[in-house]
Length: 435
Image 1 (cartoon, helix red, strand yellow):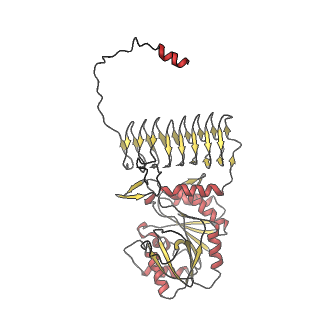
Image 2: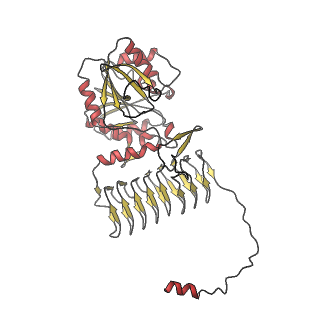
Image 3: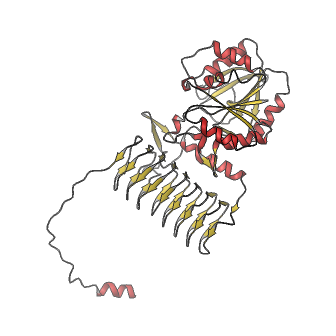
């Protein structure tokens, strides 16, 4: 069975992260994790739907794997999932597994689908069994067969406890394409409308109940759970070529790669990944974080529960519960806020709407190629666009567009000094020190 892997999206909800397919978890891009998962489950013939902004990078990853990975382009990204499927209409036929690169599942999902697909039904859809409301599509099921797909029903009116995951098997891909070409919709649900039309016309679709891992990456605050999932599966340990000071402290499970240096009195608390050639300097603390390649966690810096890309440099900083891109530098004294004064859930502004991160602790999201000046402070939930410079001593409490130069303005007040410290008696102070 061939696989259609959907990876063309522009990751709008992840901004300023450029493309979530290339977020590197434990040193590997997300899309590589997904391709390797398919390979582990004997799906080695994969057509990846990309777009102009990522096709070359996907192609390079595909060539590095022992799989048959081809690429096709979705030209009109406004057509969503339906457009992605239609872009492959001349390249696939027969049975096809459709899988989203943004939904992290475990092997059990594919095992269930393969077993189910031995039956005589026309299509099979994986339904994640949930115990609380999820704002997505739900499967309306009768005697195991799907009667309809209900998009975002009101809480309490869900037709079942099965959320529609983009892990679908269609035994006749051409039939799906025919329905997609016929239907239209004003919303981004043309694919679901086509499925509903097929069901009404008698196409048999069976729901496959799945209660395993499902981690959708829709917003930056989902990144941490995906890191935890991949870390749990990975082999732990410290590379023989890493240099760890005898005075450093390593606690819990860690992955420390080639060329890493951990200096005197530094502390690394697992679960933690530190990528190739990175440095954890004297008195630094790294805990429960993903640190990319060639990063410097500088003197007296703390990185907590954060995701750092490659070449992120810090010095006497605090970075908490944040998602950072590549090639970022923090001036001394720069700190990220990750907790509101009222300790309520952190909200993030997306297109004028405040979205709840569902956590009282969330820091900042930063794109690539950003510089922070000394003593800059960034409030919880702020996004800093790629290519921006943040000046010294400013407080950032709003989103910053890409390629911005942000600096504060203040007036220095200079007057004559009427006080003197020339003859200050410090004898008592010295006595107190001796005591």
